[in-house]
Length: 471
Image (cartoon, rainbow, N blue to C red):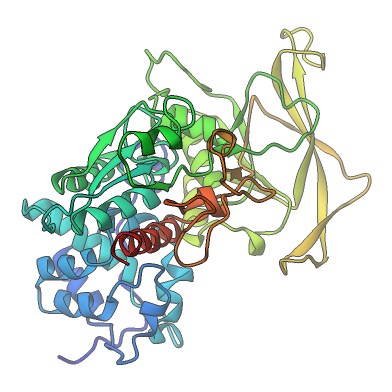
């Protein structure tokens, strides 16, 4: 079959911007069978497969794309599933543009092949057309506990279950999925998709225990006492960061973690919600990553009059995925770049809006920035412009400044080494911690990172745990 040499990838159909800005339905609508085959034909099936080297879980990308070319969508799914437990998730939220697609040779003189879009298509096709149960090996008699049901925990659980281990996943919240459920909005990742992936693991024999906080309800020591022979910690990074500026204690100031959890998991957008969040008014989101985009776009859907992204560098330095930035702009988010907050102002009542002692957010004082020399990470350092302070009238402020690992497990587990940021120290490539039989991976080790990198860590740890029992 001759390749499709169109330099442009097939566009992803989406909801109209002004329509989707007022609903929580998924923005991207997915490829049709015809479009998927056409996009797959753009793949040159390179013998050295550079795209695979860009995938943290090393999916055999040309192999699954070749099956799409032939219309063998279920076979394509089986190929992906050899290396990924969460293909429908990865096809939606992984930053393919900086990973597998960045290595695609078609990207040299045009767009790379839409690998992520094809992965999503294959997973969605399988979920709609197949009820075949996953194949697992016979039970091997070993029990493994997984702490956290986010991407690293679910991946580790799936890989071990396939090898015949009896796996139990312990989740602190009332539903499984971790950050996939509480952190990523419905319009980017429908929760039914996450539940389908969890159901696949349950069909493999994985037990999922919710409402259990490891470090409080049970400790790591308790798990060993209960007969688990190895433990994988994939508890994520749920501790939010703040700026330490005056006014952060005012009503109407949220961490992005709390704001998104209330909306995604606790359904705070409902009129009868027991935990409501903002309704209307002006909203400022401080930060420029994917979480900031998620918070800003969620605020729009919750009825905000105006939503501002306040970021201290320029658009070129925005760490969010380009697609998320474009979607936010299309939906009406106002980007206030090269600005940094210095104080959040409040009031006690409408006649006393300038009282700084207590009450509700009334405005955010910002200072304009300019970019200087690169910092240690290679990004140009933002420098305040003296005398450039101004006020932005807002009713809600959302701090999307990153997160770090919660110290609960560290403080209740003897012999578990952590670094200055609270991340668990592990052996590279295996996830081994300083405690015998305990492994860790994902954001609990690295701090906030990508879904696919967490999956890669879960996969590496599963391999190391298997070796632990079989050496």
